[in-house]
Amino acid sequence: MINVFQPSLGERELSAVREVFESNWIGKGSRVAAFEAAFAEHVGVAREQVTSVNSCTEATFLAMRLLDVGPGDEVVLPTVSFVGAANAVAAAGARPVFCDVDPRTLNATVDGVAARLTPATKAVLPLHYGGHPGQIAEIAELCRDRGLFLVEDAANAQASRVHGRACGTLGDIGVWSFDHGKIAVSVDGGMLYARDPELVERATKLAYFGLEQTSGYDQAMRSRTRWWEFEISSFSRRSIMNDVLAAVGHVQLGRLGEFLSRRREVVAAYDEALREVPGLLIPPPLPEGHESSYYLYWVQMDPGVRDSVARYLYERGIYTTFRYPQLHKVRAYQAGDGRFPGAERAAGATLCLPLHQALSDDDVSLVITTLIEAMDVHRGASGAPASGEQASGEKVA
Ligand SMILES: *Cc1c(COP(=O)(O)O)cnc(C)c1O
Image (cartoon, rainbow, N blue to C red; front, side):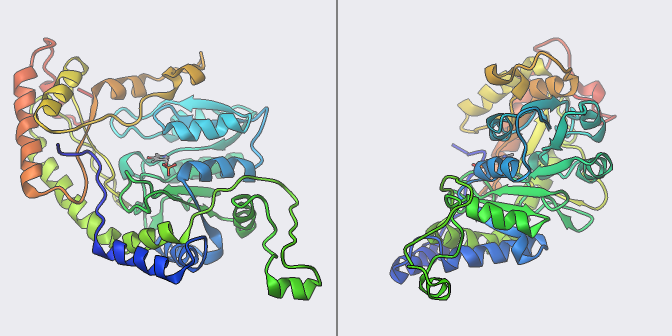
């Protein structure tokens, strides 16, 4: 089976883990600190603006707490979002308010966000679909103008940039994932950036019960207390990273450039081979100054054949998927208001193809030829070939 996502782990990660084992300290320590410092450098921010946690979802939950999002507040996020983002909003007692997305990029638009703002809106929580930054700079400007917090779910955007600025660092808080399905992985793990270093300091405490970081022998001697005593001023749970995971993540972060160049090659091969296939649309080109992480590669077709094409590929050993099913449709979030024509069209038409750095040239060729074959077999099945819309490149098939 050719996977949609796949990590690339090897000897370097293993020997980093072995070093941690041999050091006899596997908890949160120097490796976590080194990984955080390397990540801060990677996204071009100060060391004290970044802290790690055990997942991106946890970082999003923390973000809500750091920004005091709670009952009576609304948070606007695209209906095409990862479920954990909406869960973080709802768990804080606030209301997730979904906005529509562009049917071609599947990203929130500045107009779509603006249309959903009310006096109760406290924050906006977009993602960068597939790694494409989309209108994140415009959305950041809207948030600044309206006095709203911007939290970026940058899980798809480990290396995405807008005019040199790393996605995830355009707003108040950004969160990234290093889970098993991302590009660089730490097996499980997340990073949190906050513009205000004081929020990062609070996040660090909240990720460890709310403990004031003043324990330890030296500190105890200074404050004339016993070193096993502690203080908390606000309570929380435990969601720290550890040195084993950080050692893996740090090596992977160093390999991100190598991963990206292979992903770029695969995307170029898909673009080249699929651009002219009747009934198929490839992802819209990146605007000038935008850099993608190439996390997802999505094609769009007549919704009447999409599921059959997915099955055809699956039966021939090629796994595909659709990210992210619309949240306003799931039981917990059926909002009853809002119109989502862009998301509806995209959800019916879109299929995410295998995209990872371990794909061989043969894998890529097989995906291409099998998809072209699938389109031939299914063309006209719904009586509405979509090739007429190919030229504009703007409509969904
Ligand atoms: C993977 C992902 C997450 C969740 O990350 P975890 O580290 O697994 O919690 C959140 N948002 C998006 C867009 C993702 O792709």
